[in-house]
Image (cartoon, rainbow, N blue to C red):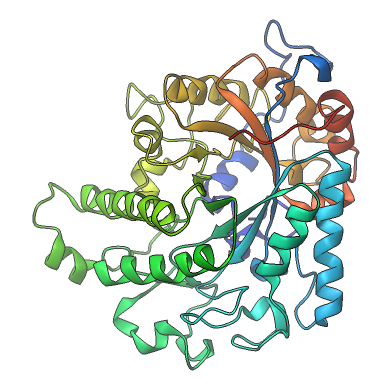
Length: 429
């Protein structure tokens, strides 16, 4: 997504799932009240009951590794300690009757497996390129499958670093060997999506993991072109001059670059490991209706189509991806982006397509001090699942993220499990 601190720390530093810009809108000035649940939805989170839930539904959790967000808890742990923490997350998922873990295995153009293309992740040992002495992704796949869990490998295609100093990268890092591929922006380093050689390389690096391990899916979050930063320009002038002549605008060219990545990666996954799925978890608003009559009745400060150059609606309608998990990280009744409004909008987008629709849920907000009163209510998340059950297009939910799944400070996840996950379910296929 995109995939930031809407959590207990500063998400701007994280850049994992949430857009800092829209967070500022969401947390400053929007109504902090929760309206009554829409007609037909239980006002106090009473579920339709496990017996009436789908026998196959996505019940997932993200495990973020960037900046040691969820796992490992800190860099430099022994291999034994890292394994123990990882399996504890898997065991917790099983206890909560989840069926899928989405593990971030390429957080910053690095790897949590022995990649011949990119260095070991610094979030393992504290030093980029440092061998951790074990194979985290291979172990995760094996241990997840042993517990009956699916393992979706989560990759960030273009983010290189959460700083702008190339000399801090491992000496072997491809970004140091190809500085012309790199764009500094917003305090971070990114690969330039407008260069065909970049798209080819990042796909090669990611597909290496797919070839090595029987992952159940490949997963992208919301980071394509970076979230806009006021007063700064993403400098892709040279690439646009070389490759943009056929397009009416730079924005259209950028969207085509992202479309190409999505189509090419989908084809690559199917070629390398047939049967492995490809899913994406974008920011939850494609476009506001004020910008496009096909858009949602929202007033989001970020729109994926315009700001991230990601035409997420098109990917669903054209079935370029197997599943989509829009990050609907707002409460029911939130003025700028009502959860109920967006569930209905995404259900309509998915209607009649072969792309599965799952909903990204903001478990990290439940009980967080900076969040509005709706998120202090442990029943808010359960209400989300009750509401979503009205839409047959919604095939499940994914929770952000593993640290909050483990802590569950106000019992919001326990309430979800009690209300909706009374018995196990297989993931949709």
